[in-house]
Length: 311
Image 1 (tube, rainbow, N blue to C red):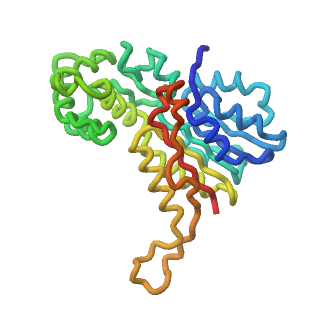
Image 2 (cartoon, helix red, strand yellow):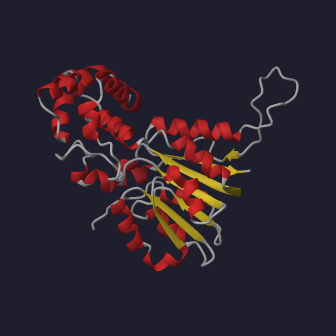
Image 3 (spheres, rainbow, N blue to C red):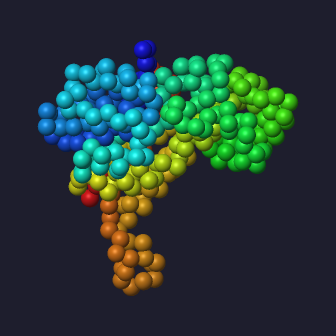
């Protein structure tokens, strides 16, 4: 299987994971095993890598690439939101690090039939996990207009959300919207020509919004960080790469919340909340790709890496 994916912020994320040879590390977004292969190379036979992915194609490729190291690898076909339960299933009580490379992979974008791309015609799908009952087709063809508008506005930050939702409903009343390029045509019709002249592809934000809705991408981030922190050994690192402001904001705010040692009102003379600091923020500002990386991999342009450490 031809699985092409360039790992973004590769050196920066691996270095910040601060890998111990005998440690237990979780790659929550296994993908083509780019990051995972480097992690496992740094582990001794006493170390362990657990790789999560909800994409069965990614898992097949990862197994091939990690084959020489499978004595220290466990692969889980699941969303990283299930980290706590899956670790328990494996009999693992504590970990030394977690890496998340969020968003859609280059392979998923380039594989036309998956329906992630607004540049290639394909059935409306966008599911990272084919077992997911909700696809882009259901979102586009069954969501009420108000709900479509909310999704496109909140997850795509699309200023023309109301108009796009209105045009989608009008078109589907005539006939179902079945393919990606059919949806692109509706979006282009909804956005005035002058507004389409500058900036990214007119369908980019709407496709992002629908993909996030289908895969519940934002819903799982905060809980995963909290669950990973609860099973992280002291000194363990959480490294998270995001690709748009909504993801980055959740990671930033969750790190901040877990880094607080008291949440009592400022007027209280002594702390009564009993809260303890769980994380120390390592990256006061996110790490971003170098100009050289962006030139070699334009899809890395919006990437940000944030790192926190268990205290």
